[in-house]
Length: 536
Image 1 (cartoon, rainbow, N blue to C red):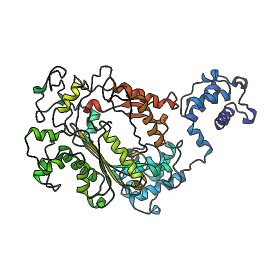
Image 2: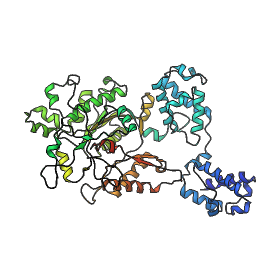
Image 3: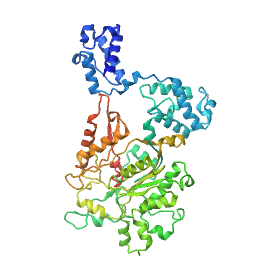
């Protein structure tokens, strides 16, 4: 507060061209002879200081520096002001850090890098530029796209760009990556997934950009929905839902590649087969080989909450044998991966319904922080083999009668079931940077709780959701007022959506906002349906 008052007095002195010693923080600003142009100038200076929009009319309501300081303290983020007292970061300091990052990427000595030489001449390519940008973003808490290197082609130009863009952001330290936050952060270094109408992450992203609706009528390869169409409240084992998001070719599997016999593969839940394939693709995406992780403490954490393949085997009158149990048990999902890759970290299947994959992430992050594993695969997988859950959830009135998951819409009438599999590979951020891994994102904090007693067994609880959101941001050491986007669960139900939004509103009530703050809320559920184990 005192620092803020001193800064405001300094700005005022500069505006009216007097010594700061001549000013008093309890004196009405009008007594200093401030006319409209000066007031506008003063408000612009304060706006620059707070990175917000301050109108000159504010001085008519808060006419002394003390009153103005109180108002600004209660309504704006003052963290940037604290930087005023710190030594200004010099371009030479940035040069040392960025030069070190670049030398690590190029695997050369810093002395071999000339600041005025075009980066392409050092052998930089699109992959290395992306890695360079990601490392800079992590170091300076900023967002730099690799395309910026088309405009800033030398190290000197990059340093100047960083200095201009991050002038108001505290550097982690003069030496690279030494903050406590950095020590606890977890990096995502590998990704692979399959979704309805998307065989990989790239296709999924393109579908999102194009607004592709991936919800379709239930394919005949699954079951004949027409035989089950009816009112679940009056007709036994009938359902009104005939839509969903479905994966293609779930019966295709290269058993020989994974050293599994055709007979055993036929008795394996498709979820096991899909998981094996996507874990393999994730390993490839991270540019790792099996030999890089075998005999290590790498963990495998899988979120899963649906398994009706066993029921399908019964309906098909398949003879049960030893492979039937290993092919359909939840516990085998992660263990089959650990067995294949010969890894020795925790291998756990987690079923917490829609939050399964997030809780798997929570378990993996905590296992890494406690030293139980140095790498971890986190996955979620869901396949609908039979209409069992369509009938059950239709009877409960949870499914959309229109086949549309209308997230946050007043006309929302339920959710649409979907399928998918997603895998990420996690590694401590510090180690990932040291090893020059490709970093997709950073996990700064995780939290889990339970709703406890609510309106019903399956109903969400506003108070509990608010608490867990606050806890996650607190653990992440992130100022909640700086959040600009939230990917929500967004079930598309008249109960779930309002509770989720209300919980977010209450969790964010403690944040300090200016009129320029905003936070978008979105969900991919309308394009895919709900994949059961994937809450977001």
